Image (cartoon, rainbow, N blue to C red):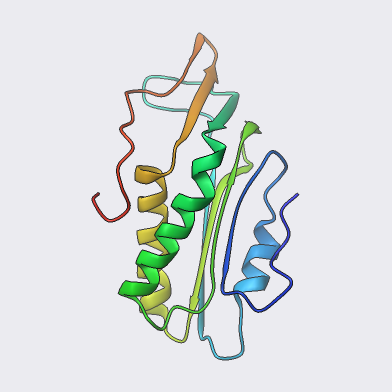
Length: 157
């Protein structure tokens, strides 16, 4: 189970095979000096392009590379938005039932523009640069993704 950092570190990254702590991530990101905390929760949905009745998503990761790549995203985000305060990026592996969160990104800052932009940057970079793959199970079959995913370096997408 993922738990927020117990010290004053501004970054919380992790991979878990349990339900993601969405509420805890948002609560952790809120600070007295921040007027904005943006939460993105990517949830498993019941359909995909050409695939009705999706019943399950399953994620696998190259675990040794996940944390270093998430930390590289954190570093890149802080370089672009120096007033970014707390940043959480959490991803689930294993089976994720429809309606549950597969990925969570939370960004906090003194102003909303930074929080929105940083959260968007982080989820986009995570999808492009972190080696995590998805299998969908639907009424007529199952498959590992709709097309090949090429992992790139942070900042190159």
